[in-house]
Length: 265
Image (cartoon, rainbow, N blue to C red; front, side):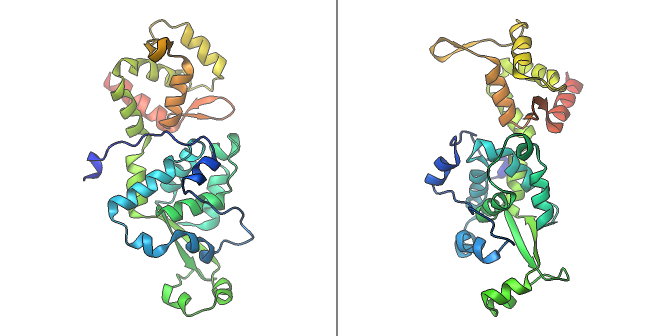
């Protein structure tokens, strides 16, 4: 199946890390000093990863990114960031400074999040010596664990082929397009809310704007439930068009897509 033909994944995820873990998702529980390739590889199962087909590898990465709502965007952004190879601590710093880490109180450490993506096959880590030189697997295999730890100074982190494909498949543009295609009559409401949130807005401000605009899609859905603004905020958040920074604000991706929509209108 071509990537372009692949069914767009749902972003319905367990509400907590515990629920994710019960389904088989695991992360390192603490860092214990410097990162260890041996600790990560023990859980990755490198042989199993090597035997995956391309589709299986892509599905594994998508599952990892979408498994927890609270981690979806930061995992996606980390994959995108590492399409350019990065030193391990640079990736940690990127995660620590992200909106999700600063404003949403992500409980997993950057080290844990990187490990999740490594185990899923979305990121690769290449051990480097003190001079920045790559250490071959053959060299490591000939050393004891202590000797390996002494030799490895850091790691180069880079997005794998499956990880890069997941970045393209799960781009905010594709997510927003999928949402608009599902319910075209709500499109104007989505675009208007992105426009409104180019300035940071609290939810009460969004609700006031929504309630005061009869042109918005206020349609009634199952069980006589009328759509409320939190429905739109949730969908735009999951699409990567809005982000929480102490208030709801349009992301760069959301604003770019909004300007493209205006140009086509």
